[in-house]
Length: 484
Ligand code: ACM
Image (cartoon, rainbow, N blue to C red; front, side, top):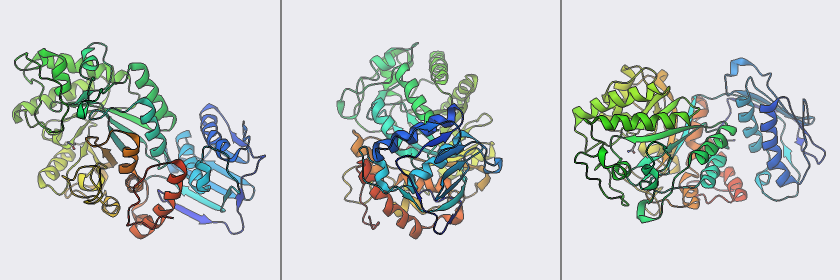
């Protein structure tokens, strides 16, 4: 299993076998929706009818679990009589169902009927996460990905109990979310991407569908509008946002650090007020990410002014601020979350410490560990290497609690693995860079510190390969792993 659960015990001679007359029992709409999701998948692979019924079934989902396990904790028991998953919340039940899917044979992920048996070795599991934030970021700006492509990513990451999807919705190369009050952002700013392809954007209806699809899998979408740098697409769409009112051309290459909003113009903040309002309206989660990274073309004192004003606008629209660690140099409102993307750079570490001194919490995305766009090794055909080569072991073997010197363990909300897409333009390339590294980051975010062990993880990861084969995932068969 990945992530490794908090506690599990084998039940001798208690193998559960899913049979053709099995039912799935669940009470109430939320649990019945989870039951239907499980049934839908298992009907495809087993060919069984698997009716979902009120109350108990062969597999029972119940919301009467202990509160001590928190919002995402659950208990699971599989024995000869059936499977029971209990939790205090529907979210906990969902995480437990994720575990059941991993306990079933790999062929249970198939999309056409397979031969049984459909056995689960008898077990009792008690499980809850170490951290509340376990994320993946997808950059849909450098290359645009359609609704169906993002849904596919959501399906895959939800298997590993990831609970946040951070969407990098704007950058120099493209603006990807409809904003009614500034329509040229998408009309013009969304019309291309790296390499000059046609780009694209999400209409409000599409974005709402995406947020709902994620929510149905207990994943919160964190939208990012990157500011004040990484803004060429916006600057190109509206002349008045520029210093001299002359808009730059659209940009389809991959350099960073050349663009900046105009810090001393009122229109900059009128623009952000509108954008943050419209994006916040589409965000049921409480975080709105305003970027803040690599503002190399913004004078530093102006950058600090900007952070103060822009964060205030996020708060005005009812959201907590999330930002890359550079924002910690400026004043942060209460409840802010700072995303650390440093390596062993002391300047980045000082900013993480400054964030904590201001009362912010941290999500950790160390580039030399968690950046999914780094090459695995020198031969990897895709990806970049500015933060180093990131093997599977390198991405797994670190401790979030002690990563940044001077930052107390209590300030860590969790971890996130970002996928920047300069070199990534289709789903098979996403899959190749995400798998097998993402499950390791997910385990660092979920499993107890005492459970983190490379030899154990490496062995468990080898078994996941058989699941990705069934799912048709184009994962990298890293030579570090003895794939089975
Ligand atoms: C970043 O990688 N510029 C956050």
